[in-house]
Length: 473
Image 1: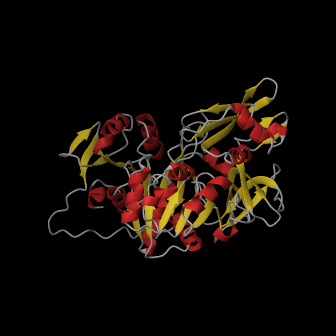
Image 2: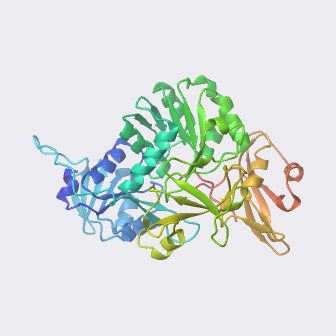
Image 3: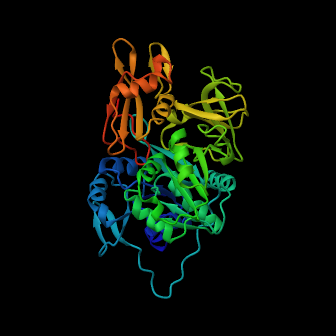
C-alpha cells in the first residue's frame, strides 16, 4: 500500500494484477483496495498482446506481477506506455523500462514506519474491480464492478451456501476468474480459511493438500470433477471433513452429478449458474438434486430473475427464453464500451434502473425452476429446428467412459447447420461412431442426433475451465 501511494496511485486508478494464485496475489488485491484504486485480475495464461490491450483499454497506471512472467510483461509494457509502475515478486534492484518504474514486491517498509491509514473517501458506488471477460468474438470486455456489487454478491452466495467462520476452502480456481476470486472475498468477510493451489493440473497434489488441511468446502468446475472421477486412487485421501461441493462455469450432466455424490456422499452438492457481469445468479438446493438434477435452481437471495421472449415480454413458467437478472450485484457496464453495455443493461421494471440481459437461454418447468439451454449464439439451427447443444451433451454423458463432450453446429449445405459431437473417452474405452449414434437415436428426436462424431484426446478450454467451442466449429 505504501509503495502504491509513493507512485501516486489513488482513488479510481486501475492496477492490473498479473499473478498466479498466491499470498502475493491476495495481498495485492487488498492493497489496491486500501488506496481506493481499482484492481484488475488477469489470468497468467494471457499473452502479451492481449495483456497490452487490457492495460491500454483500462488506462491502467500500475501492474503487479512475478518474475516468471517477465518476458510477457516486458512485451506488453512496450505497447502500454500509460503504466507508470510495475511491481514484480522477486525482482532485483529498481530500474526503468519504456518509461515504467520497475519495482520489487513486496516493497521494503522503512524501519519503524507504520502503515498509513486506508483511503476513507471511497464509497460503495466507486469501482472496486474491472474483470475482463472474453466474448465469442472481438476484444475482451472489462466488466465494471462497484464495492456494492461485490459485497452484495458475496453476501448472497455466503448466505445460501451457509459458509462458516470455521470453514477451510480449497481453491484451485484461478483468482483472475470471479469464481476463484470470490472464495477469497467470502472467506475474508467470514474469517474463514482458504487453501490456495496454483491450478488443478495435478489433481493428486491438490487432493493431498485437501486431506492435510482438512478441507470442508471444495468449489470446482466440470473439468475438475471429470479428472477426479477418472482417478483410481481417490479413496487413498481422507476427505471426510468435506461438507460442501459447488459447481458453476458450466452445468453438470446428470451422470456427473451421480458420480460426484457417489464419491462424496457426506457432502452437499450445489449446482449453480453465474456470469462475470453479476457473479452469481442461481443455485439448486441440494435436496432438489434427486427431483430435478439437471436444473440450476432459482434466483439467489436479494435478487429477481425472469425469462423474456424475443419481443422482450416476460414469459410464464413452462417457457423458454433469455434470462434477465435484477439486483444490486449487477455490473455497472463494460469499461469504455457503451454500445455493448446498452445491449446488456436495459431498462428495468422501474424507470430509475437497468437490468441485465444475460444472453443465455433457459427454460422453466411448471414450478419455475430453471434449466440451462445454451448461449444464444450456441443454439444450432438444423433442418429448420432449434437444437440445444446442452440437451445432446446430457444424452452423450450417459454413455459410460465419456470424460468430456462438446456439441456444436457446423455448416452444412443441406441442413443449414449439422450437429457435430466431439467426444473424449477415458483411456481403454472405445466406441464407434455408430455406437454413439445408436445411443442418441434411442433418446433424441432425429433432428437432434449428431450427423458426425469425432473422438479426440482432449478439448480446448477457456482460462475459466469452460470448454471452448469457437475453435471446434
